Image (cartoon, rainbow, N blue to C red; front, side, top):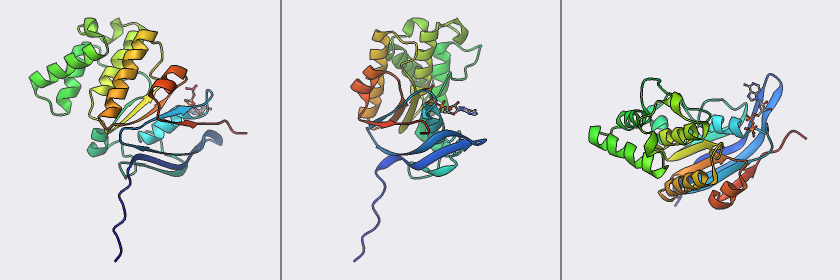
Length: 219
Ligand SMILES: Nc1ncnc2c1ncn2[C@@H]1O[C@H](COP(=O)(O)OP(=O)(O)OP(=O)(O)O)[C@@H](O)[C@H]1O
């Protein structure tokens, strides 16, 4: 009797993924697998390809070598099922000048199926979780850089996600706020989300990461 092939338990699998652009190496070959509930940290010096690898997993950049699978399929940014499975904070999020922070959060929740009351509640929960409730009625251009980072994270966490990608979530955060972010990401992982994050923060690495992929420059 032949047994059926076992489904891949990894929500994210990258195999020998590399990116070359105009003759320049953006990312040397990288391989990793991330299961539900796991946090993989990408580390390495500036310019070793951490953001590039996150962009590849998010379907924003095609690899020039190797393969990447998210929930068993190649990333497709325009596929709604893929968009419903993956949330990413890669640089400042796009925001609308005429919507407050709370309205942005409600809008995202409503986009993904929440009714009005539920969307409002979801927004309040995220604002509380990241201690940014006092910013609820600010517009995006009325925030400090650290506050913008927290709001960007809240907007990302407002999306449904079995896979969460974060590029240096520690940026511009004070130690207390960084602790809140670590808690928030840990809670998502405990709920079964696979997390891939790039970081230069020893604390984040120590407190959050289950595994680490260290990227190197071209020798
Ligand atoms: N649009 C682009 N065109 C050409 N080269 C690029 C482009 N974006 C990034 N690179 C190059 O790709 C390499 C990897 O950049 P990437 O942003 O992925 O590094 P990183 O590890 O995230 O760096 P950091 O720690 O500074 O954030 C770098 O050498 C960078 O100069």
